[in-house]
Image (cartoon, rainbow, N blue to C red; front, side, top):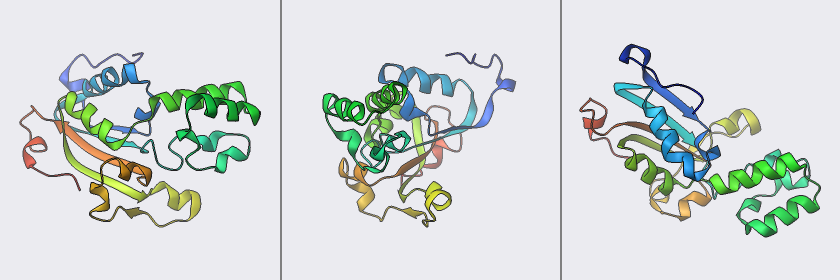
Length: 186
C-alpha cells in the first residue's frame, strides 16, 4: 500500500469510507486492502463499504466502453476469452480492455464480500442492498429503491439485481457499541 498506516490512535478515524473501490482491487490483494483500511480505524470505529455486485447488469463497468458495448448489460459475464475478443472486435482501446479485464478478475459478489469482511474480523452492523442505486437518481433520474424483503435473501441470485451493496462494519472484537449492538443485516 502506498498510504502508510497511522502510527498513533490520535491519527485514526471514527468513520472510514470506502465507496466503489473494493471491486477494483485484484483478488490476491483484497484481504490486505481490507486489513490496511482497518488500520485507519479507532477501536470503536465503523467503516462504510459500498460496491456494485459483480453479476448486476453493469457490474463489469462496461459503461466505460467507447463503443455501443457501453449499453450492453451483463456483457462482463461472458467467458473471458469471448469477452476479450468482443472488446477488441469493437475496437475498444487497449487501456479500456485492460481495465475491464482487471475488473472482471476483481468482481465481488455480496457473499464474497461478507466472507472477506468476516475473515478480517469485521462484523456487519447494517447492510443495505439496493435494487436501484441512489447514484442513479443523479445519473438517470431514477428513484432509489432498496431490495424488497425476501429478494435480498436469495443468495447468488440477488447479485444479478443488486446494483449497489452498502455495509456499515465494525471490528467484531472491539467490544464497542457497534459490534455489540446485535444489529442484523437488512
